[in-house]
Image (tube, rainbow, N blue to C red):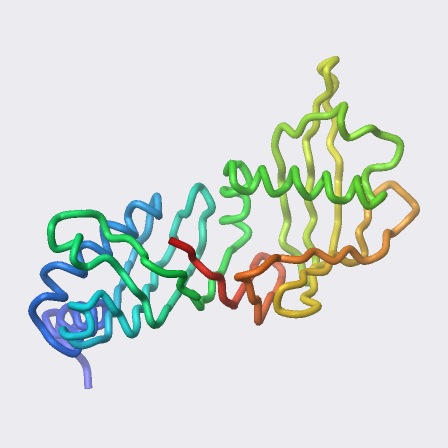
Length: 249
């Protein structure tokens, strides 16, 4: 059976509309507040869909049993994502203050489960983001501290200008454009394979600086408390991560 244009529009609207067990307070107050909070966290998000489940009595106490958010081409602090779906349960918020016009805030830590997909195009557009640049500087520092840095150079004498990257089948190829105090610029190429050892330990395997004869041993990185990664799939032109991260008030 085919749908007419009005029917298709109605079906699409129903697909992205928030799901609630009761109508009234939630659509009028909570959903706009949640959208405002999300807008404050994301620089851009298309096809944003919010699903809220819970009765008015629960929500009036500031308790949200279940919230699910999905977006396409989301931009978080300069990091672009092709697809993102996150959901959380047992959320405690300051609903009393929201009703008085105050911003929505979390009152307790919330484990957020989700999946994000990043394409090659997204990676190229995101590598200049301060958040990623900071992480890449920390990666160079970590490798240097473990004795796995670029051979024959003193990392402290070089500054990172920008980075290029390629998502391969199971590997990541990075090109660090560096400059020293004399203005000399040079590109450092790094090729690594990524693997999860467990939910909070990321392994960098076959660390290799092309042009050097040695391939370095595995480097294990503790992702810290509040992180649990169930899947990390690196394919040619695509990175998919599924797991949990704890968001604190």
